[in-house]
Length: 316
Image (cartoon, rainbow, N blue to C red):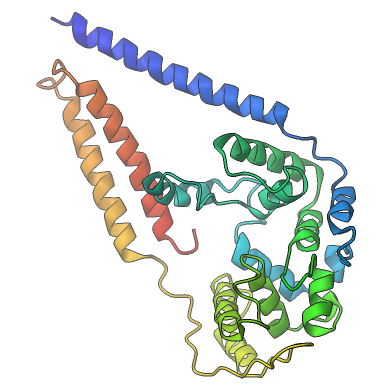
């Protein structure tokens, strides 16, 4: 009677081993297939050709704009090596439920790879692997400052402005190094959706997005709530377009450290799956058919629960 469970256990072990080998082969293949992380500046220049944009170094960009982009787009930029595994875990519950890569947790480095090396396409699992491999290569060859500058030089800011130099001139008539906090936070908010947040066509929506950027700066310690409030309390003049009116009495607090319902859900899932896994190892259930499948399901639920708990941390 003991042979059936033993045989099932062997099949499960072989399946897990095959899965590990498959993942390793896929990762190695993506590394080999992804482009070499060379000629970064040449690729930036090629993207800007004919757009009126100009490539500049990180030192020619106002520090507050660099901080705003990092806080908004990739808050762990200075702590990861191209791939943000915490961000991947945070995105996992949403992507599994929706069967998509809508929250693919792309880092600034991965965005640079997608824009300049992969033709802007990373919407398939294979492209995602290539993107991750390329990001690791880029981080091994270039400094964080060079990668961030390449991102800001390549990003589209709307109104025909490619790169931060063109965007600063188009919206405010100043050099990127001279941008103040209000100007920088407005520009940082455009990268995600330039048409939607266009301050000329949609000034109210652009202001709302700027508030999100300011909250991100406060949450990550780049600004105090008082400094952020003072930024909004002044009108913001555009070079060609409406002057955005001042905003007062806006709540700029970063919010609680946790999203409590997500934390509770993740903890409940983890506890339930752990109890189920422990119960499946009792002598009474060892010979029951399907127990190994139940253990696998419990392990998957534990991983999903851990991802949900991590996602509940606002600063994770």
